[in-house]
Length: 164
Image (cartoon, rainbow, N blue to C red):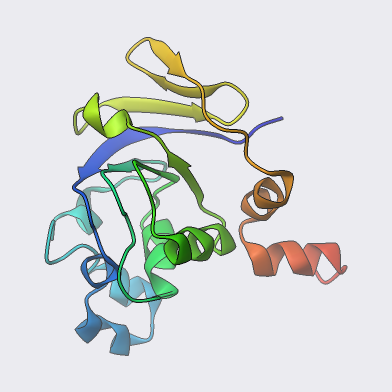
């Protein structure tokens, strides 16, 4: 059974870097809840207050570029975002997001959608948008296992019988 998500689309441009996701001056807050109030502040300061549980970010190219800020995908997940669909991802952001249990999909949906549109994602069938379904590349089993567990640490705890 594949991973399934459904939510409203929030569109972001090309080259959204980790300094936009969480500006440097807020990292010293040392608390994901407090930091998340400042997510995307340089670009879209209203996002933390309007994103709803299950919503999806759809972005252009090179999402998550910049410094290796492991907290960036954790903050996005804390806001309730279920999935990020972008034309491409910075590789280190991609891995950090997976390690935090977040599904990332490379697609050009950005060119065809509008902010506020509804999207359904099923990793077995694809991205359902506007009455059609766009296939996606298969999610490797090891990545799916991490996402299903809620992140790498949770998966390893479960695998080693340390689940709480």
